[in-house]
Image (cartoon, rainbow, N blue to C red):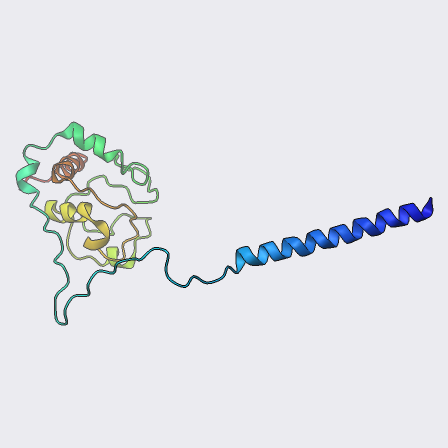
Length: 178
């Protein structure tokens, strides 16, 4: 009887070794596949601009002033919901990921107490006037490179105008329209 048990144990050990060796061969073929002789899918590269050619001009942002007069405040409030995850809008509201935006129109960037602005935002000399807000909301990263704001921007000029008009109204003394 003892010899049969010894044979079973030896067989189990040999089988475990064979399984380990076989899985090693399979794993090696999956991890280190044989290199392809040619690419399976060719990727076309765009032509490089000629020497001395200028990069593509940035998109022109239309002025917001003509759109502010007919801006829809309800649409601006709805658009502000995109911002509400990071910002508050009420007087004395708390800072979140972004600063409180009450009375933003006419204020200099980087001026909300208790909020850690990026160096680039804090050193921006231009105040948040209507056109500066329009440019920033269209593409924050391009408007103030180095800003911590991760928002991609608002593409539609009418939506930006509605949001700016709504933000203008969030003030004790709204700035006059241009």
